[in-house]
Length: 355
Image (tube, rainbow, N blue to C red; front, top):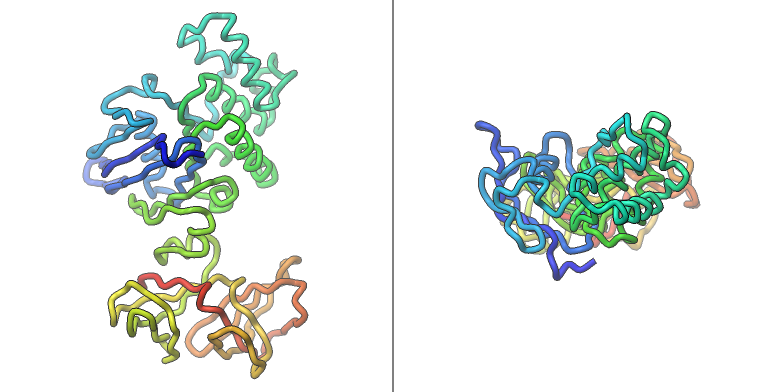
């Protein structure tokens, strides 16, 4: 991956449908050879953003550049991109090889060269021996591989993928996540991947852009997005979080709603209402009164216990709210409903977001 060389740039991109703003002033640079995911709930603008890169939609304002070239009004077939959709759009009357060959025929690639490229693409997605089958004779995962081969056979500079795993069952989807990432590394092509599934994005991506209501809220590595969310929405959408309401007292102190003071740096205005977010696995639970090396502690009582095999999830009632605590099954202590406990956390694992 070479982020110093950009594969895709969006500059102040806006897309409106009548009075509805689907994409709102998006600025984004995707590095050459990067696996980049646009993540967000349905209707957030991620697919519309992908379609503008593909040329299937034109921006109301702003510009789209691919490898430094302004796309302007260029139609999809004139852009150095290919797109894989969730429904795969395979031709049912054609064989695997015929589907893969179709784009090459449209581009009038010589027959000898076509044969070489088809063999390369089918081998790439591990469909050797199935070239003469038709889509109805293939499983969902195999059909997805054919769609990928058809998109990659033209050697696009950028591959756009719109929820391509959405129709697969969970086990196959998880398997294909690994295969897709390995495939991207092998071909070295920039992948721009749209999904509403946090696990998909975190598993495969070099970086993630989180979208909500047309806006790009945060861009970062999976670790950045998970450990250091910039907004309450991002913290809540990626994984699970606890939110403690607070007020900013100074640039390095916040006051929780129960009056406790916490030393945390924040760029929010003094007096602003904020939320302290901390992941359930970053909370430590121990018997009430026991000392802890963590800097902040809150007393409470256990409301419920859920056994998950590799972890136990406790719901702990404190004075003004409930906290979710995820404890490793290998931990020495087990607690029951009604037990009085102390929950503690290290401020370095805490983020301050707008309330």
